Image 1 (cartoon, rainbow, N blue to C red):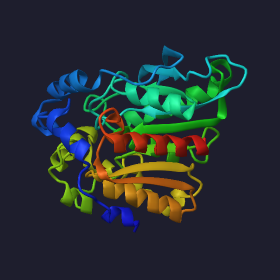
Image 2 (image 1 turned 90 degrees about the vertical axis):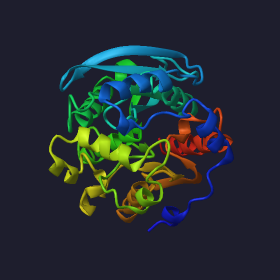
Image 3 (image 1 turned 60 degrees about the vertical axis):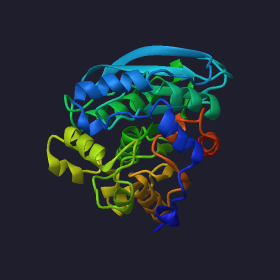
Length: 321
């Protein structure tokens, strides 16, 4: 196993201060709330985007498996839609445990990725559980990927440089879509997975070590999984838990950038997935940050180490895309 699963430094002092005094201080635990309460809190705390300026932001509604599927496209400063040189693009799935999250809550990361990677970021407002349990969210992300490929010419993007990306639950969705489409006509060029949810196994080392972590606890993850899966047996399905995929299914998967944090209950599964992809011959850049915690890429304004991590993660994605 990658040594990163044992690499946990003391919590970064700036991050510790942010947890005590910043916008995430004293938040109630997700699992202590109803779905409605959790969504309202998430909207209040995480929907105010302060990301970098981009050339344009465009709202679209595309055909999805469940009807109209809203997407939001962020065009980087250097180019705009219809430019002569076609842009790479990333189809992005937000975090929120499949239960929470909106296009607005993903605004900061999409602006950062568009600007730093030099790609159009296509954010997907996928259907949420428990109203729309597994596999609805993954189906929506896949539909957005296929739409971007079909409309590449009109959008001014390069279908050969079309990737998938996500944070937390959205990173797990991106990984699932990357596996499901690997042998098909529309297959992503890269998968950018930021602190991904990849398996429902609460006995991994990081779950034991950080069971009571402030930003995301074991009890929170149990709450999210219970609402995502209408049938608990679906936890063995690689579309829900990509880490459960057979070794053969990983062969030929797109190159990957995987970001993990030492103080994250999800650390062990991210480390394990990076190991499994490498074993399968997949080019994998594993960016591990022992002193950081879940969601660190949204704290770059307050935590210097997170800002450095953002540079490293997006540089790796740009190189592969």
